[in-house]
Image 1: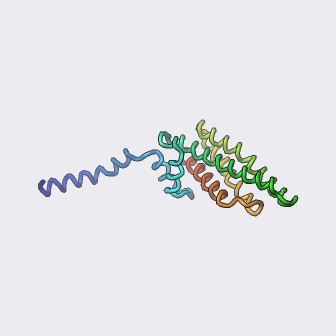
Image 2: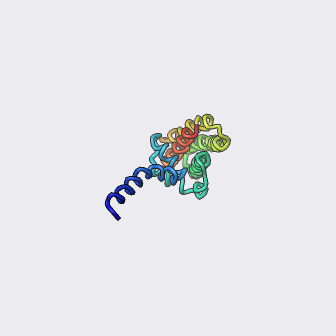
Image 3: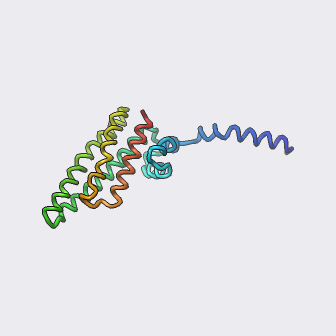
Length: 169
């Protein structure tokens, strides 16, 4: 192949590369590219969404629902942990602290479910507002009960769901 023909083909490929990438990018990559400016790491976003098998066939709205449902699952795990703390509380002080944390997470789970349903119904502003409030559930429990890494996981999942919801507006 002559050098001028090779250079012409190479130049053409370089010019078309952005269009090829745009066509071949997945909804997960598109959404995660957008939300990375919302306190959400792009790699975390991709890994988290891909952890749910439904994400391979989901559009942006479906990814928002998935993120909200992952948040619900984490909140449910935390609530179970708090119930165990309550069951094993050795004194009234620890029991009251666990009851307070249980109340917070017992109330946040239906709110998160409502957010997931709202995202599915395209009521993004309402879902985003509720996710914003749900973000405080873990921080409200800091110093009340020990949640460990689950609190950070919950916050990160809630931020992801909220960022995707904002992207959908």
